[in-house]
Length: 371
Image 1: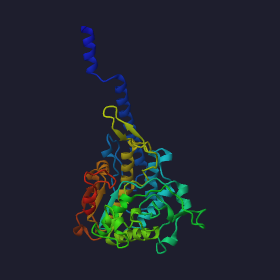
Image 2: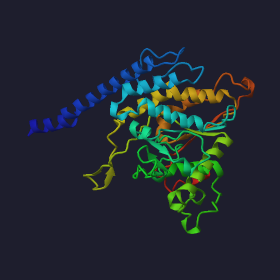
Image 3: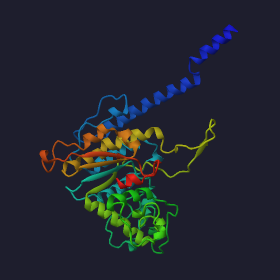
Image 4: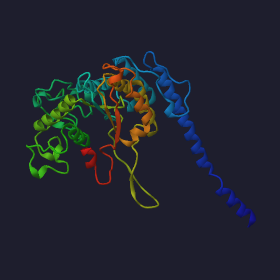
Protein backbone atom coordinates (compact mmCIF):
# COMPACT_ATOMS: atom_id res chain seq x y z
CA UNK A 1 0.00 0.00 0.00
CA UNK A 2 2.84 2.37 0.82
CA UNK A 3 4.46 2.33 -2.65
CA UNK A 4 1.08 2.93 -4.25
CA UNK A 5 0.47 5.89 -1.98
CA UNK A 6 3.89 7.28 -2.80
CA UNK A 7 3.20 7.02 -6.49
CA UNK A 8 -0.09 8.85 -6.09
CA UNK A 9 1.58 11.61 -4.11
CA UNK A 10 4.26 11.96 -6.74
CA UNK A 11 1.74 12.18 -9.55
CA UNK A 12 -0.17 15.00 -7.84
CA UNK A 13 2.98 17.09 -7.52
CA UNK A 14 3.94 16.93 -11.19
CA UNK A 15 2.21 17.77 -14.43
CA UNK A 16 1.54 14.86 -16.76
CA UNK A 17 4.26 14.41 -19.36
CA UNK A 18 1.84 15.18 -22.19
CA UNK A 19 0.86 18.51 -20.65
CA UNK A 20 4.49 19.40 -19.94
CA UNK A 21 5.42 18.80 -23.56
CA UNK A 22 2.48 20.88 -24.79
CA UNK A 23 3.37 23.79 -22.52
CA UNK A 24 7.00 23.66 -23.61
CA UNK A 25 5.97 23.65 -27.26
CA UNK A 26 3.77 26.67 -26.70
CA UNK A 27 6.62 28.66 -25.10
CA UNK A 28 8.92 27.74 -27.97
CA UNK A 29 6.29 28.75 -30.53
CA UNK A 30 5.79 32.11 -28.80
CA UNK A 31 9.51 32.78 -29.04
CA UNK A 32 9.39 31.94 -32.74
CA UNK A 33 6.60 34.48 -33.19
CA UNK A 34 8.58 37.11 -31.28
CA UNK A 35 11.73 36.50 -33.30
CA UNK A 36 9.86 36.53 -36.59
CA UNK A 37 7.95 39.70 -35.62
CA UNK A 38 11.18 41.48 -34.69
CA UNK A 39 12.82 40.43 -37.94
CA UNK A 40 9.85 41.67 -39.96
CA UNK A 41 9.82 44.94 -38.05
CA UNK A 42 13.53 45.49 -38.67
CA UNK A 43 13.14 44.76 -42.40
CA UNK A 44 10.26 47.22 -42.85
CA UNK A 45 11.26 50.24 -40.74
CA UNK A 46 10.59 53.76 -42.06
CA UNK A 47 13.69 55.75 -42.98
CA UNK A 48 15.46 57.12 -39.92
CA UNK A 49 13.81 54.68 -37.49
CA UNK A 50 15.35 51.90 -35.44
CA UNK A 51 14.26 48.60 -33.91
CA UNK A 52 15.40 46.91 -30.69
CA UNK A 53 18.12 44.28 -31.06
CA UNK A 54 16.16 41.73 -29.06
CA UNK A 55 12.70 41.37 -27.54
CA UNK A 56 11.44 39.04 -24.84
CA UNK A 57 7.78 40.13 -25.03
CA UNK A 58 5.49 42.00 -27.40
CA UNK A 59 5.58 45.19 -25.34
CA UNK A 60 9.21 45.64 -26.44
CA UNK A 61 8.38 45.33 -30.14
CA UNK A 62 8.67 48.97 -31.16
CA UNK A 63 9.74 51.17 -34.02
CA UNK A 64 11.84 53.95 -32.47
CA UNK A 65 11.00 57.16 -34.28
CA UNK A 66 8.28 58.49 -36.60
CA UNK A 67 8.07 58.89 -40.35
CA UNK A 68 8.31 62.46 -41.59
CA UNK A 69 5.59 61.91 -44.19
CA UNK A 70 2.88 59.30 -44.77
CA UNK A 71 3.79 57.69 -48.08
CA UNK A 72 2.65 54.73 -50.14
CA UNK A 73 6.02 53.12 -49.45
CA UNK A 74 5.26 53.25 -45.72
CA UNK A 75 2.03 51.33 -46.39
CA UNK A 76 3.87 48.90 -48.67
CA UNK A 77 6.42 48.09 -45.94
CA UNK A 78 3.69 47.54 -43.34
CA UNK A 79 1.84 45.22 -45.71
CA UNK A 80 5.05 43.32 -46.49
CA UNK A 81 5.49 42.63 -42.78
CA UNK A 82 1.95 41.21 -42.61
CA UNK A 83 2.69 38.97 -45.56
CA UNK A 84 5.73 37.63 -43.73
CA UNK A 85 3.75 36.96 -40.55
CA UNK A 86 0.46 35.49 -41.75
CA UNK A 87 -0.46 32.53 -43.95
CA UNK A 88 -0.71 33.80 -47.53
CA UNK A 89 -4.41 32.97 -47.81
CA UNK A 90 -5.17 35.01 -44.68
CA UNK A 91 -3.58 38.28 -45.80
CA UNK A 92 -5.19 40.93 -47.99
CA UNK A 93 -3.39 41.68 -51.23
CA UNK A 94 -1.55 44.99 -51.55
CA UNK A 95 -4.20 46.11 -54.08
CA UNK A 96 -6.96 45.66 -51.49
CA UNK A 97 -4.91 47.39 -48.79
CA UNK A 98 -4.31 50.38 -51.06
CA UNK A 99 -8.00 50.56 -51.98
CA UNK A 100 -8.99 50.50 -48.30
CA UNK A 101 -6.45 53.28 -47.68
CA UNK A 102 -8.05 55.38 -50.39
CA UNK A 103 -11.35 55.20 -48.49
CA UNK A 104 -9.73 56.26 -45.20
CA UNK A 105 -8.01 59.14 -46.94
CA UNK A 106 -11.13 60.26 -48.79
CA UNK A 107 -13.04 60.63 -45.52
CA UNK A 108 -10.12 62.23 -43.67
CA UNK A 109 -11.02 65.65 -42.24
CA UNK A 110 -9.24 68.66 -43.72
CA UNK A 111 -5.65 69.22 -42.67
CA UNK A 112 -5.55 70.97 -39.32
CA UNK A 113 -9.14 69.98 -38.52
CA UNK A 114 -8.69 66.45 -37.13
CA UNK A 115 -10.16 66.92 -33.67
CA UNK A 116 -11.03 63.32 -32.77
CA UNK A 117 -9.90 59.92 -34.02
CA UNK A 118 -12.04 56.81 -33.60
CA UNK A 119 -9.52 53.97 -33.57
CA UNK A 120 -10.90 50.49 -34.31
CA UNK A 121 -9.19 47.13 -34.84
CA UNK A 122 -9.69 46.22 -38.46
CA UNK A 123 -11.97 45.93 -41.42
CA UNK A 124 -12.82 42.52 -42.91
CA UNK A 125 -10.72 40.64 -45.43
CA UNK A 126 -11.69 41.24 -49.07
CA UNK A 127 -10.72 38.99 -51.96
CA UNK A 128 -8.81 40.81 -54.71
CA UNK A 129 -11.06 39.64 -57.56
CA UNK A 130 -14.12 40.72 -55.57
CA UNK A 131 -12.63 44.17 -55.08
CA UNK A 132 -11.58 44.67 -58.69
CA UNK A 133 -14.79 43.34 -60.26
CA UNK A 134 -17.33 44.94 -57.91
CA UNK A 135 -18.20 48.62 -57.88
CA UNK A 136 -20.73 50.95 -56.35
CA UNK A 137 -23.77 51.74 -58.50
CA UNK A 138 -23.30 55.50 -58.81
CA UNK A 139 -26.87 55.96 -60.03
CA UNK A 140 -27.94 55.39 -56.42
CA UNK A 141 -25.63 58.11 -55.08
CA UNK A 142 -24.85 60.46 -57.98
CA UNK A 143 -23.14 63.14 -55.85
CA UNK A 144 -20.57 60.82 -54.30
CA UNK A 145 -17.10 61.39 -55.78
CA UNK A 146 -14.98 58.99 -53.71
CA UNK A 147 -13.59 55.47 -54.32
CA UNK A 148 -16.11 53.05 -55.75
CA UNK A 149 -14.49 49.61 -55.70
CA UNK A 150 -15.82 47.17 -53.13
CA UNK A 151 -13.98 46.68 -49.83
CA UNK A 152 -15.40 45.19 -46.64
CA UNK A 153 -14.95 48.45 -44.80
CA UNK A 154 -17.55 50.70 -43.18
CA UNK A 155 -16.39 53.69 -45.27
CA UNK A 156 -17.40 51.76 -48.38
CA UNK A 157 -21.17 52.30 -48.40
CA UNK A 158 -21.59 49.27 -50.67
CA UNK A 159 -20.47 47.00 -47.83
CA UNK A 160 -23.63 45.49 -46.37
CA UNK A 161 -25.73 46.77 -49.30
CA UNK A 162 -25.70 44.00 -51.94
CA UNK A 163 -28.35 45.78 -54.00
CA UNK A 164 -26.16 48.82 -54.58
CA UNK A 165 -23.04 47.07 -55.92
CA UNK A 166 -22.61 45.20 -59.18
CA UNK A 167 -19.88 43.07 -60.67
CA UNK A 168 -18.30 44.15 -63.95
CA UNK A 169 -20.28 41.50 -65.83
CA UNK A 170 -23.54 42.62 -64.25
CA UNK A 171 -23.28 46.42 -64.29
CA UNK A 172 -25.27 46.85 -67.46
CA UNK A 173 -28.14 44.77 -66.16
CA UNK A 174 -27.94 46.06 -62.59
CA UNK A 175 -27.93 42.56 -61.15
CA UNK A 176 -26.87 42.61 -57.52
CA UNK A 177 -23.91 40.68 -56.18
CA UNK A 178 -22.66 39.73 -52.70
CA UNK A 179 -26.13 38.65 -51.57
CA UNK A 180 -24.77 37.28 -48.26
CA UNK A 181 -23.02 40.56 -47.41
CA UNK A 182 -24.28 41.56 -43.96
CA UNK A 183 -22.09 44.62 -43.41
CA UNK A 184 -21.43 46.14 -40.01
CA UNK A 185 -24.62 47.57 -38.51
CA UNK A 186 -23.04 48.06 -35.05
CA UNK A 187 -20.46 50.47 -36.43
CA UNK A 188 -23.08 52.38 -38.40
CA UNK A 189 -25.00 52.84 -35.17
CA UNK A 190 -21.81 54.08 -33.48
CA UNK A 191 -21.04 56.47 -36.34
CA UNK A 192 -24.60 57.79 -36.29
CA UNK A 193 -24.24 58.55 -32.56
CA UNK A 194 -20.87 60.26 -33.08
CA UNK A 195 -22.14 62.23 -36.06
CA UNK A 196 -25.47 63.63 -34.88
CA UNK A 197 -26.08 62.46 -31.31
CA UNK A 198 -28.54 59.99 -29.84
CA UNK A 199 -31.42 62.50 -29.64
CA UNK A 200 -31.67 62.68 -33.43
CA UNK A 201 -34.81 61.17 -34.98
CA UNK A 202 -34.93 60.56 -38.76
CA UNK A 203 -38.12 62.05 -40.17
CA UNK A 204 -38.45 59.49 -42.98
CA UNK A 205 -38.56 56.31 -40.84
CA UNK A 206 -41.98 55.01 -39.73
CA UNK A 207 -42.40 55.01 -35.94
CA UNK A 208 -43.01 51.25 -36.00
CA UNK A 209 -39.50 50.72 -37.41
CA UNK A 210 -37.50 52.90 -35.03
CA UNK A 211 -36.23 50.02 -32.90
CA UNK A 212 -33.84 50.18 -29.97
CA UNK A 213 -31.69 53.01 -31.31
CA UNK A 214 -34.00 55.36 -33.26
CA UNK A 215 -31.18 57.82 -34.06
CA UNK A 216 -29.64 55.27 -36.46
CA UNK A 217 -32.62 53.58 -38.09
CA UNK A 218 -32.27 55.46 -41.38
CA UNK A 219 -28.93 53.67 -42.00
CA UNK A 220 -30.11 50.24 -40.82
CA UNK A 221 -32.21 47.83 -42.87
CA UNK A 222 -34.67 47.48 -40.01
CA UNK A 223 -35.71 51.08 -40.70
CA UNK A 224 -37.43 49.94 -43.88
CA UNK A 225 -36.04 52.65 -46.18
CA UNK A 226 -35.13 51.80 -49.74
CA UNK A 227 -31.45 51.38 -50.56
CA UNK A 228 -31.10 54.82 -52.18
CA UNK A 229 -32.38 56.63 -49.07
CA UNK A 230 -30.22 54.46 -46.83
CA UNK A 231 -27.10 55.26 -48.86
CA UNK A 232 -27.95 58.96 -48.72
CA UNK A 233 -28.16 58.76 -44.92
CA UNK A 234 -24.86 56.87 -44.68
CA UNK A 235 -23.02 59.37 -46.87
CA UNK A 236 -24.53 62.22 -44.85
CA UNK A 237 -23.17 60.69 -41.63
CA UNK A 238 -19.69 60.25 -43.09
CA UNK A 239 -19.71 63.83 -44.42
CA UNK A 240 -20.85 65.24 -41.07
CA UNK A 241 -18.09 63.33 -39.27
CA UNK A 242 -15.56 64.69 -41.75
CA UNK A 243 -16.79 68.27 -41.34
CA UNK A 244 -16.73 67.98 -37.55
CA UNK A 245 -13.13 66.72 -37.62
CA UNK A 246 -13.90 63.13 -36.59
CA UNK A 247 -11.95 60.40 -38.38
CA UNK A 248 -12.54 56.64 -38.11
CA UNK A 249 -9.44 54.57 -38.88
CA UNK A 250 -8.26 51.03 -38.14
CA UNK A 251 -5.07 49.87 -36.47
CA UNK A 252 -4.60 46.96 -38.86
CA UNK A 253 -3.53 47.74 -42.41
CA UNK A 254 -5.09 44.44 -43.53
CA UNK A 255 -8.57 43.03 -43.07
CA UNK A 256 -8.18 40.77 -40.02
CA UNK A 257 -11.69 39.33 -39.95
CA UNK A 258 -12.39 36.51 -42.39
CA UNK A 259 -15.86 35.21 -43.23
CA UNK A 260 -16.07 31.58 -42.07
CA UNK A 261 -18.50 29.18 -40.51
CA UNK A 262 -18.90 29.71 -36.78
CA UNK A 263 -18.20 26.55 -34.76
CA UNK A 264 -19.41 25.72 -31.26
CA UNK A 265 -18.45 23.27 -28.54
CA UNK A 266 -20.22 21.91 -25.49
CA UNK A 267 -18.63 22.03 -22.06
CA UNK A 268 -18.22 18.55 -20.54
CA UNK A 269 -18.61 20.01 -17.04
CA UNK A 270 -21.64 22.29 -17.45
CA UNK A 271 -23.10 21.19 -20.82
CA UNK A 272 -23.12 24.86 -21.84
CA UNK A 273 -22.60 25.69 -25.51
CA UNK A 274 -19.64 27.98 -26.19
CA UNK A 275 -18.65 29.75 -29.38
CA UNK A 276 -15.18 28.65 -30.52
CA UNK A 277 -12.49 31.02 -31.72
CA UNK A 278 -12.36 31.19 -35.50
CA UNK A 279 -9.55 29.24 -37.12
CA UNK A 280 -8.41 31.97 -39.53
CA UNK A 281 -6.23 33.90 -39.13
CA UNK A 282 -4.35 32.01 -36.40
CA UNK A 283 -5.42 33.67 -33.15
CA UNK A 284 -1.88 33.60 -31.70
CA UNK A 285 -0.81 35.96 -34.49
CA UNK A 286 -3.42 38.65 -33.78
CA UNK A 287 -1.42 40.66 -31.24
CA UNK A 288 1.84 40.57 -33.28
CA UNK A 289 -0.12 41.51 -36.42
CA UNK A 290 -1.80 44.49 -34.75
CA UNK A 291 1.48 45.69 -33.23
CA UNK A 292 3.34 45.45 -36.56
CA UNK A 293 0.57 47.45 -38.27
CA UNK A 294 0.69 50.02 -35.47
CA UNK A 295 4.46 50.40 -35.33
CA UNK A 296 5.03 50.41 -39.09
CA UNK A 297 2.08 52.53 -40.23
CA UNK A 298 -0.83 53.53 -38.01
CA UNK A 299 1.08 55.28 -35.24
CA UNK A 300 2.76 57.44 -37.87
CA UNK A 301 -0.66 58.46 -39.23
CA UNK A 302 -1.83 59.40 -35.74
CA UNK A 303 1.37 61.29 -34.92
CA UNK A 304 1.06 63.27 -38.18
CA UNK A 305 -2.55 64.12 -37.26
CA UNK A 306 -1.50 65.22 -33.77
CA UNK A 307 1.24 67.43 -35.17
CA UNK A 308 -1.39 69.39 -37.11
CA UNK A 309 -2.40 70.79 -33.72
CA UNK A 310 -6.14 70.14 -33.40
CA UNK A 311 -6.34 66.54 -32.14
CA UNK A 312 -7.76 66.44 -28.61
CA UNK A 313 -9.51 63.06 -28.41
CA UNK A 314 -8.56 59.49 -29.31
CA UNK A 315 -11.39 57.00 -28.82
CA UNK A 316 -10.04 53.48 -28.60
CA UNK A 317 -12.70 50.97 -29.67
CA UNK A 318 -12.44 47.57 -27.99
CA UNK A 319 -10.92 46.28 -24.76
CA UNK A 320 -8.79 43.71 -26.60
CA UNK A 321 -7.20 46.46 -28.68
CA UNK A 322 -6.36 48.40 -25.53
CA UNK A 323 -4.67 45.32 -24.07
CA UNK A 324 -2.67 44.69 -27.25
CA UNK A 325 -1.40 48.22 -27.83
CA UNK A 326 -1.12 49.55 -24.25
CA UNK A 327 -1.74 53.10 -23.10
CA UNK A 328 2.00 53.76 -23.31
CA UNK A 329 2.09 53.32 -27.10
CA UNK A 330 -1.07 55.37 -27.58
CA UNK A 331 0.05 58.23 -25.34
CA UNK A 332 3.40 58.48 -27.10
CA UNK A 333 1.72 58.65 -30.52
CA UNK A 334 -0.62 61.53 -29.61
CA UNK A 335 2.06 63.56 -27.82
CA UNK A 336 4.26 65.19 -30.48
CA UNK A 337 7.11 67.52 -29.58
CA UNK A 338 6.13 70.06 -32.25
CA UNK A 339 3.07 70.91 -34.31
CA UNK A 340 1.94 73.17 -37.11
CA UNK A 341 0.36 75.41 -34.49
CA UNK A 342 3.53 75.55 -32.36
CA UNK A 343 4.61 73.62 -29.24
CA UNK A 344 2.91 75.87 -26.70
CA UNK A 345 -0.51 75.61 -28.34
CA UNK A 346 -0.71 71.80 -28.56
CA UNK A 347 -3.98 70.55 -27.06
CA UNK A 348 -3.80 67.75 -24.55
CA UNK A 349 -5.20 64.70 -26.31
CA UNK A 350 -7.45 62.60 -24.12
CA UNK A 351 -7.49 58.83 -24.72
CA UNK A 352 -10.92 57.33 -24.10
CA UNK A 353 -11.30 53.52 -24.32
CA UNK A 354 -14.78 52.17 -25.05
CA UNK A 355 -16.05 48.60 -25.61
CA UNK A 356 -16.38 47.29 -29.14
CA UNK A 357 -19.95 47.91 -30.37
CA UNK A 358 -20.41 44.18 -31.08
CA UNK A 359 -19.29 43.20 -27.55
CA UNK A 360 -21.76 41.77 -25.05
CA UNK A 361 -22.40 44.56 -22.54
CA UNK A 362 -24.68 44.07 -19.51
CA UNK A 363 -27.58 46.46 -20.08
CA UNK A 364 -26.64 47.03 -23.72
CA UNK A 365 -24.42 49.51 -25.56
CA UNK A 366 -26.85 52.42 -25.26
CA UNK A 367 -24.89 54.37 -22.59
CA UNK A 368 -21.75 54.17 -24.71
CA UNK A 369 -23.58 55.52 -27.77
CA UNK A 370 -24.75 58.47 -25.65
CA UNK A 371 -21.27 59.02 -24.27
